[in-house]
Image (cartoon, rainbow, N blue to C red):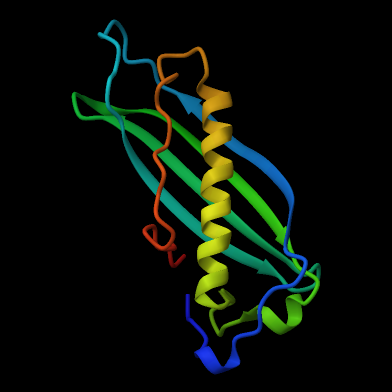
Length: 148
């Protein structure tokens, strides 16, 4: 994702989370095993823009692992759809068709999508062997976007 220079930095107005979609979830029970006390997460974030509908779609995919088990224990994919009143001023599509947005907006959208995904993870994995697999708080900008 390319970043705009600071002098051409319009800010989003009336930014809103329009919809949240659970795209997929899975559990892979490893069989009899003592309760898990620590988890590792592979996190992938991608953004797309729909300039006809003035929407930014942020997809978060998370795979849950444990250091003692070599298989993936669970996974989740969530799509967060954002809208803003001045979409055309703030979001541009680059030559690869990827959204070109100010860095602070990208961090805000990622942070919101990660927090939303954390809640969906808890609701989805509640009562299962992944009940305590709560995604930790992640500093804005710590997870970079997949360039796909």
